[in-house]
Length: 275
Image (cartoon, rainbow, N blue to C red; front, top):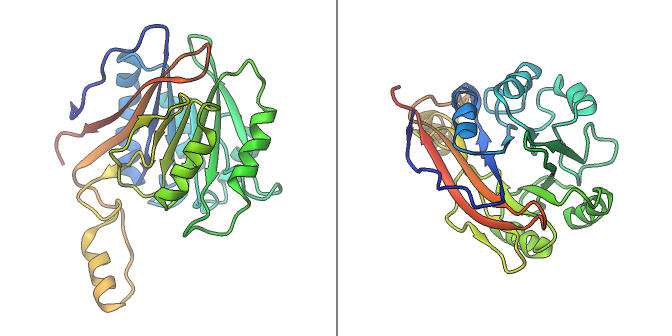
């Protein structure tokens, strides 16, 4: 592996959290699992992964969940493809480091938030929300996060939100709604990293989309030619996961563990060498 972008030195007296963008298929799984140890060596205290596209581009299997945990991932978020592999439902009910979108119906399998602990002893509350613009009908994400913030123990000051949404306006609205109340609001789902990483006035780190972990010679992680053919002819094709130019896309945030607010934010990309 080689670095496209290097991690800067961690801010003093801070917790560094890395959130890996949508993992697509076997190429994405391979690169993320191989790089967790490197992220740890570079000073990262916790790694959160959005894995809703891990299973051949749609969903997450139990085996993949175990692989991510064995590699050292601290928490896993998902999205609108959460239940594409039905076997993951038991994991969603029984494990404490994976969450469903909190604005799904109450009876939908999974927990609305989880709390994971870093090796340095800091607790992180992780929440997933689904946007409503151009997405499947779901409950109000603003009402859902308000309820969850009331449920998180006050001593857990680091509060992390993965907003899985299509529209940048949806994501920006949530960012300002939660500014000063959570450590980060980071977007997933579109697979294309945005260059708007920032710390809002109240101290919340924000970015519209982290980007994709998978094959970049692709259309959103899928092979190019079948998508072009279907787009131009309406002839249905199978959109297989692409395999060339594999990269990991992530965003890092340094958080003050006393206040739970962000000190710094940056984009990160690693590129695999070879085919």
